[in-house]
Image (cartoon, rainbow, N blue to C red; front, side):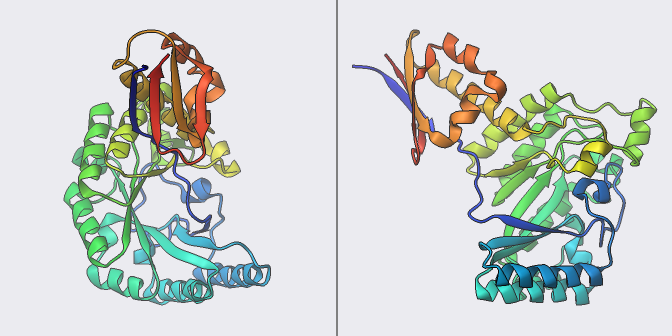
Length: 345
């Protein structure tokens, strides 16, 4: 009789509904961080809030008339809670109107930990907001100071508590690789985040964008970004820890906006960063599982959603899996299988 070992599968996150992002580049932000250029990161030209509102009203009406599939609306790229009260409530009122019709399934926004207050959060929740994503970036005080974030780690903890007390879902955004950051500080950030038990996490490794203060430091030799290999290894360790705590990582790396790609001067950008990280993490998990089985040929059952990550980007895991005794013909995929099961043949 064959031996077997199994663990719950770290299946890639799939949102229940597509997200429609509304970008507010830099709006409401009290400081300019050394790495930030929201115009280039979002690929969105600067506009007034009145113009953004008018465009959104037009686009929502068109989506409703076109019977578009329901989606979640997200206000990204700025500090939503620090927008003028008139505009943040007007934007929410517009989105909530379509939420009551079933076109918008939920509403989220991003903001800074030092721009959260109980009265504002409670009011936003009353006007239809469902989720707040906190741009924590790191829990290391020296790294926060070097990046001109303007707050202390305790501010992140306080903001999370306020968001939860307001009845809103909580997301945390992390930015590994900032000046003064290293793998151990990153793993400290991961542990701190797990302790806060957010509903999800986003990870955006630090990139050097032209026109930022960080770019000037890079040119002067004062800053060296993480390599892609270093980033993948570090994020894979973080990903496995988040997975073990049941915290979904819903995004790794910035999307391939054309303006962004033109602005990236250095840093670990890759079009399939999330897949690289999940593949590395999955390989480590399978290697660990295989230690509980005798050497020799093996078979495996796993969710179909892991098929691409299992063999790795451009097949990078294939040789390592073969050395463990696992060949493609001995892997069976199931659509809704919740576990990875490894057997000796």
